[in-house]
Image (cartoon, rainbow, N blue to C red; front, side, top):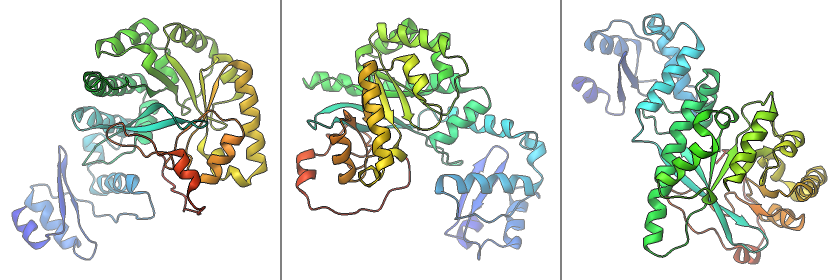
Length: 358
């Protein structure tokens, strides 16, 4: 590999249990070079594939690695040729092995009427150097392989540890205690490990209280029987946890589910929020959510706010809370949100939409 480093200084070599991954410009990494590398590391099998830059950065290397493994003939030997679920499970194993690398980002949630901070959403950021993945891809793999409870247990504990550490520092400095929202799948909410008393114990063991935690039920997983989930949510609310249904107006977050769970927070999907200032249909839908939320005692939260015109319209429609890049980006530590009065005073502009999800 020393010779290779000298010949291809722009290349990146990653050592895996099953072999070596080499990433280099296509004009430099030829079949002859790839064959030499394979021979040098003692494994004549290799697969040379292009990286599809039309894919998102978080997906292109995963797709290329999978294709290279298949092209090399290694798939069956290492178990990746058997089923997509096995590939996903191996990816999860790698994810869990990197428990010391993953990070948590904090995005502020504001009261739109006053600009005051309400809480922070905790956004878990996987750090997987040899197999980059988004948190959405990790969650979907966990659901597909029946490991969503295992994943949520891992993530919730990691988030609580980080929040507890930061909260202790704030208490020592006589600062207000942190309030945070944590994402979970419906399957985990029904698991014994997340029963209200068990979850309260997890929270208190890191120096926090249930009143500091809002649980967000994510929309990737359908709920076939809402009654057990309804009972669990009631128990969590009695323990004084907050509870939110994410992405209302999209996926599985229907009016019926929200009504059954009597959530404390309804999060309006970002696709409804974006461009609402100039979309009568979106405005009518949000008006319905506002009326619906008031009838069942839920607070409305608009996520993905990126434009000041949309912010003004959401406020005028009576939406209580908001989050998005306009109000504050996710940061490694909780940062103050942007000042709403200052935003209102700035000249209007039309920034390009940021397509990635926070």
